[in-house]
Length: 96
Image (tube, rainbow, N blue to C red; front, top):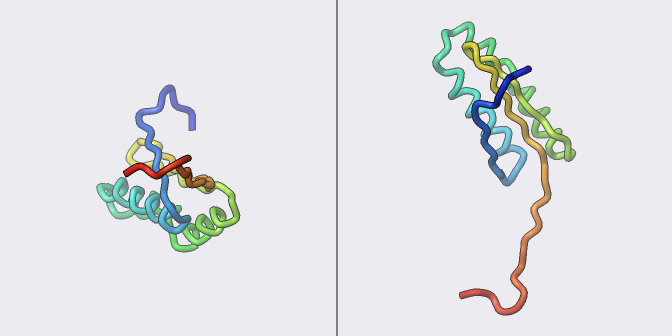
């Protein structure tokens, strides 16, 4: 939403869309684990199976996806953006 400042920020490079969405889901579940039952269910609606399939499909199409979660008064956002990593090959003899 609107925040005066960012509390923390993390960047991960993950090899496949499925693993990227899995990392988001695992992180969201860890965050919501301490909430009481109904609040936990409400917070985790965005990581339902259908939502995960849609997120993986978006990444395969080259589109970004994300999840926003309000958890015990804290607003948390995750996003995944597909990027192309090109291998960098050394010029000349390979280092030993």
